[in-house]
Length: 291
Length: 148
Image (cartoon, rainbow over all chains, first blue to last red; front, side, top):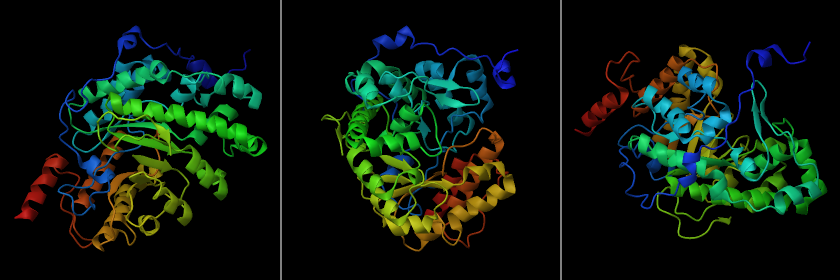
């Protein structure tokens, strides 16, 4: 007798394949303003810049749905049946395909697409192993154990963001072409606290108590890790813009677990904010900074 | 850029988010559009914020909740009609869940378009879900008429 659950027996663990060789030769588009098909629906870009009130637009306010490329779509399930979650993320053809699925199905009803990826590709890029377990969710087999452990594994380690994450950039560039200018493409990343939480807890948590205890016990160490995550994330977001993403979308943790004062300080100290002119496809002229 | 901080719904948090340099603030579904406008003061566009579970509640619930989101007493479009400033990007207040039927997701999108083509709470529905044209065509057609 084994101890695996019935669900686990029925769905054998899928293999996360590495980034395919075709991604190795990827480089950013040279002329992001002209390399892509012209955008024919800029409702999202207009509204996202807060330029327009919903009733004064020449068309209804823009709409998209968080996780619109997701498991509720049978065509998405069909792709996931054949490929593991992170294989889809790492393979530009597959990430492009599932990103386009809701745009095709709801033609004319959606005003934006969002690249299919996951916030945890950033911890992966920083050297941590992340598995997506069916019925469980994300799982870090080796979460950060202690400030010393984090010093060795995170702070003393260089992260080559372009090399580690160019599979996402390749997916973004491919998807911009695949969209044929119908709607803009959103790129995203998580806030540093969210990722720190996962890296310490080893997965999702209701209370994030290990991460919070870490920050209370060794605030300087926690701050250094948050800062490092923020730097990697900022560079990652700038790269997404260079690859063709038109709106950036950082996500922050459920803040009910963060006290008011720590909300204030973590928010101000570690929000990744590329200096790129917002909502344009132009290549940022200066390096990313933390706001 | 858009920031989405699920759970950041207190006046102080909304106010801080609206002054953080982002152009759009995403809202989870626990905050009313009017409340969010009051505490962001037109500084940012707002994105959201229909409860994702509504899409599991059947088409009558979807119709009612979309109406509320747009034209309820504290809805986004009611506020806009009162002259309260700020852009709006329609979305759920969190990710769509795996159990949603794709046709109910479509119904949600269609109802949003239908409500959003109205210019006041009293406007009659301008399009039913059985419309045989694509919604974008209908919308453009109707808007063209309004301009005449």
